[in-house]
Image 1 (cartoon, one colour):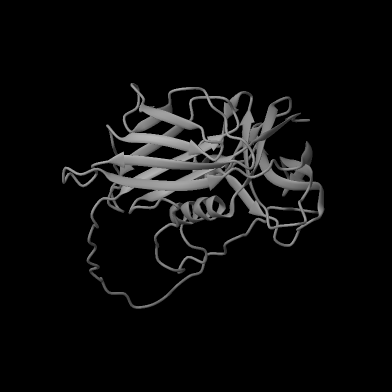
Image 2: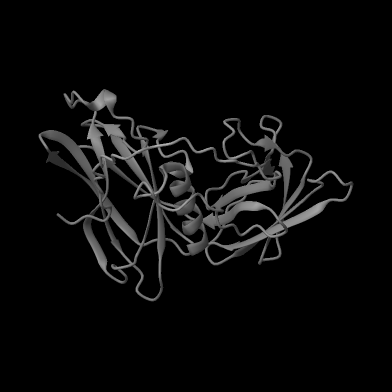
Length: 294
């Protein structure tokens, strides 16, 4: 079976040894400004979120940063002003409807007195929206895995041979966006498939809602999504820049942990925010393809 996304089975190991408690001192670093936003080609009030980082083991969300001066400049000499949302602190929206365009460069500027010394710091980031992906169509195949029914979401597309490409996939099931968070995103590069035509290649597997699986309720897997016959799936497919691909990949690794279990410790995530901030500013266009589950 041709598959684009490989499933790795982790086999637990039984470790027998003498143990002793070890006290590890953890120190929280000073908060830093976190800036995140992705421009899209969908005409809307584009959004940028700004907050202060939280301690690593803190369960509380980041503290929103208000009263910032936020501006986006394009390489076509257009300027877009953003204002803080009256409904979400720390979320800034363009004051006019806009949409990003392929090949256009966008520069983000954020001015705010984050450290409280009376002088506003300036944080900037740049991105160029990639060209659209060459996605032709999608199909859902009914398959059987270990006696249970599943559905494979397959794609048909031509990969661009001239350069390395990076892709982002999300999906809507019956008008509900299931992949709402970065940790839900499906990302992959064209390493090993550069320039090839992806003919009926599996992108993702869905579990059948009607499966009589006695283990389903005990499985707590964030990336398990369920559909049944007759459901509508809309695939949202984008070509993204390498930096944003790395950012999403690192965010997912930090949340899900290392594989193998005793991998490297948590590390700082790459950012394109200049001036001492962290986060990411990107832009991408999206192709939508709809299919009905058989």
